[in-house]
Length: 258
DNA sequence: ATGGTTGTCCTACAA
Image (tube, rainbow, N blue to C red; front, side, top):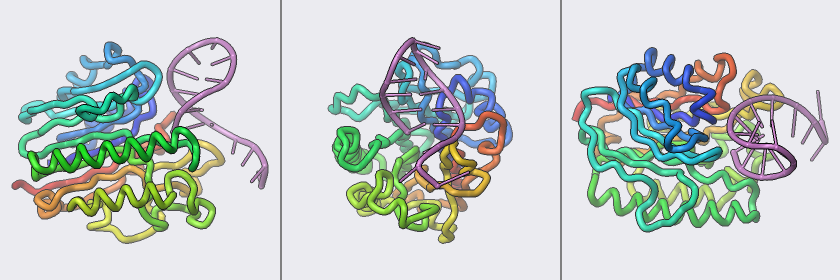
């Protein structure tokens, strides 16, 4: 089974990219973030014509997440949002696909350390941690994937000195990431690749992609039963080179059968 | 190089 995450930065604009990528990548599960569209506006028929079912949790203008699942796979227990957390921003959706619990998250960006949005980010991360801990008890084979808006390590940053203690790299954010690791989750990309300069996001400005100046902020964390099944994990830079791209590119994890 | 781009929506805001 192949599972992937991609922040598309508007599904309206990026729908042709998603259709093309689904056709070429043959993933079983694709988690999308930043749909930036109302719940009623989701392009379900186009996704279905690509051979996928869709579960999504959208809102006008901002945020919004979706899980696309290849036809024929069993889907159960879809949950929108974080239960018992009345978050006006729609950032989380979860579903069980076959034997894998998939939690798709668009983590808070946080704007700048010390801002109101940063305080919201830290609170949101605490809520997510509790939700993941609860979910692991019920679903031992679990993947938490999405746009974390956290670069976990200096290896994941094109200029660690300039980004030190800045939002996406600050110690409280990295501590939250480590607490997820402490629950028994593993950064699947780092199982196979310890190199620096491996990024999943590049700012649109200043030709950052062409110069490969980016951050690795999109992640697929897996629980131990899935870690044992992990075959490889790759960042697919191809869609970032397409015309009018998202600023993020997909991350793909391949799992061996259970 | 203290700049620069994109999406939503129409004026700033978010990233």
